[in-house]
Length: 151
Image (cartoon, rainbow, N blue to C red; front, top):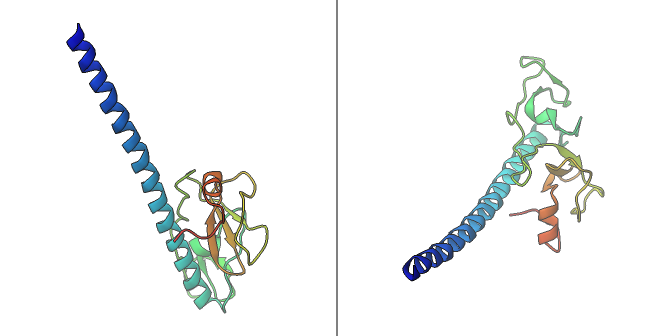
């Protein structure tokens, strides 16, 4: 009976260590994915800006359709062809790995890094003035004292 108790205790300690490691790995994977997705978004926003008279795309219905559809130089969307030769820059906006949402919300103050979540949609906060993107998720803002793009 004592041998069984020792084995069960050892198994419980090992399980606790494995679970803790798994949680840390999941968090690291989310952070890595977050950095990658922000990089993808900001790179494509800069490409869009280069082709569209130094203008960034605008938020429409909590999305950036000018990145996911064909556009003309003025930024109007339409069917791919001679009238709308530019884009799309991404097939779908990448999701925020913390909430799996790819919705886009404008920052509260243009030109300044957000300090908190805006609205309840999750996804991304986007500054049309600078092309900067931040996660719109409470876990991001609770862990950092200053919201700056994750790099």
